[in-house]
Amino acid sequence: MTDPVLFALIAGVFGLLIGSFLNVCIYRWTRDLSVVRPRSACPSCNHLIAWYDNVPVLSYLLLRGRCRYCREMIAWTYPAVELLTALFFGYFAALDGPSPLAAKDCLFAAILIGLIFSDLDTRLLPDQFTLGGLCAGMALSFFVPLPPTLFGLLAGMAGFEPAPRYVSFGEAMLGAFVPAGVMWLLGLVTGKVLNKEALGFGDVKMVAMMGAFLGIGKVLLALMLGSVLGLLVALPMRIARRNRGSEYLPFASYLGTAGLVVVANIFGIVSGLEAFLGW
Ligand SMILES: [Zn+2]
Image 1 (cartoon, helix red, strand yellow):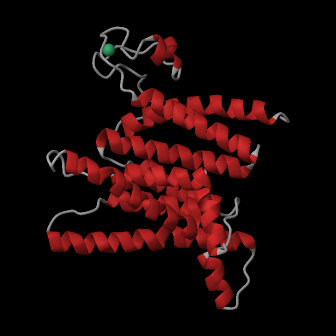
Image 2 (cartoon, helix red, strand yellow):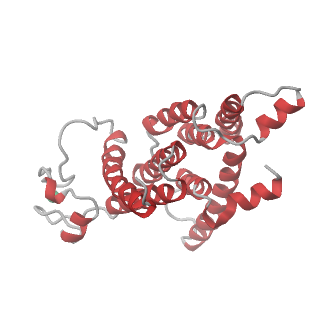
Image 3 (tube, protein in one colour):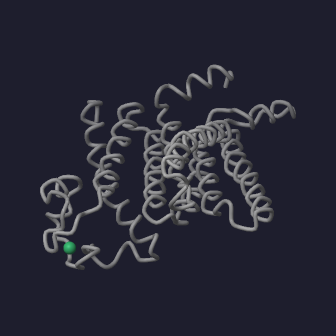
């Protein structure tokens, strides 16, 4: 595989298939169903979906967004998940070539897309994405080194010079457990004070997963970005609705979007800040 354009295209097609599988995971994991059995069926008329009506994006366009049998609308999120996954897979493949880094970033993007759309669809964040992703991120930190940030600094101050893979594991450890731990404590305290659940534990597990993949430096960046994004989008919407409607703030969707921006370095946001901080 030498042609980078061809490689990116193949990765994009692979991304379409993974996106299609993500749709199954999002639908079934948020409803405690198996992703293996039974075969996919229309959620409104229960008619089994034939393979030719299950081709990513293309079938949605050919069916004009409606079920072949009952003509019920198919959610726009199905082709959106497939297209987004394809775009990120193609992008990482073009950026990093056939490498462990590209594979890790593709996996992370797929998990984030799964969480964003699970949150939008059902407000649930399946453990398979959060805790499963946490384990995968921790394990991968040994093989795809994270650059030294806080852990590297702390180890240096303590007079240690660990091998790069241990620095990487340390960055992932700090990233997974420090911000999530602080969030969990804050949620516990505000929950006691307000006497209602202020922050779902799913959000905490999601931050832990993101920290394992990104390391402590970048997960803090993603948290800041996600909070700003949430404020920029949610506040005007609340004011426009004059506070009517649900109290629910889809924080995980903003957080996941911020995670995608950070891992793909969209707008050069990460490299700019890293240069500024000297990481
Ligand atoms: Zn139907």
